[in-house]
Image 1: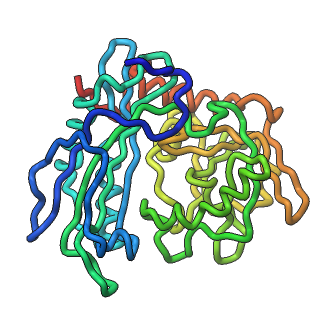
Image 2 (image 1 turned 30 degrees about the vertical axis):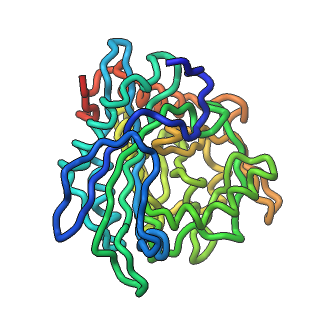
Amino acid sequence: MDLDWKNLGFAVRKTDYHVRCVYRDGKWSDLEVSPDDHLSIHIGATCLHYGQESFEGLKAYRGADDRIRLFRPWDNARRMINSARGILLAEVPEELFLEAVEKVVLLNRNYIPPYGTGATLYVRPLLIGTGPEVGVRPAKEYTFLVFVMPVGPYFKEGFKPVSMVICRKHDRAAPLGTGHLKVGGNYAASMSSVAAAHEKGFATAMYLDAREKKYIDECGPANFFAIKDNTYITPDSHSILPSITNNSLQVLAESFGMKVEKRPVPVEELAQFDEAGACGTAAVISPIGKVVDEETDRVYTFGDGVNPGPVTTRLYETLTGIQNGDLEDTFGWVKILQ
């Protein structure tokens, strides 16, 4: 495969196949393999008109032993089921989800980046309402598909501290809305504020809670965490997506002998943190070097602002070590495909 594996970026690239199936008359069809990266749907499909869709993101890794690994794919399956229940999509059974993911990864194994390049194969499961409806109601037909592409780091800086700006003029999700679900509307709501942050030279926007604008919510498309007093701290809110990566980091922190606190995090507490970061499947961990609050004219910095902190580095190296097969998986997180 003639690709510059170390400089892929996080962008769409064509691979050989995707897999799909359709839900109609109360049941899912068999999986179909297709080389076509386009989808033909009815112009009245509910995904187009009413945002009836959910997606997931996970990665396949090639280890030094050349074996292919998936990281906690069953948790992605369960999260998609939860999203489906939240906006009345047909639920994709966990077994079907895992079968589809494993099949598409193996079909596109030539696109799994070599070990040591820092790149991975990104896996995107997608569930959409494809049945036509003019009234605001759930579709009667759904399509589930999974496609893949080789990617580099989500943030171009990679594992280096990034700067963020606090956003008060936009809300990512309502307190009792869909923030806890992985649905497209949450990401559409963030695009204008993230674009504004980029124009000012920041990696992304940091959102505060929609009700009071007092507490940290999310960092663009990622969860927030911080370190102080040997404690891993991350926000607790109904409007925050339950991150599989964040959950893994909490488990690792406890295994390091640290305390873990999942609670509301006042924005002013940024001044007390030794380290801070954003985490998620795409980013893994992006250390935060600086957070700018333009409204209060405050700048919060972490460490020297140039290098990742020691705890963040240990968390990153341990997590990626398990994902790549360099460290023993004592938590039962890895699925080896071959």
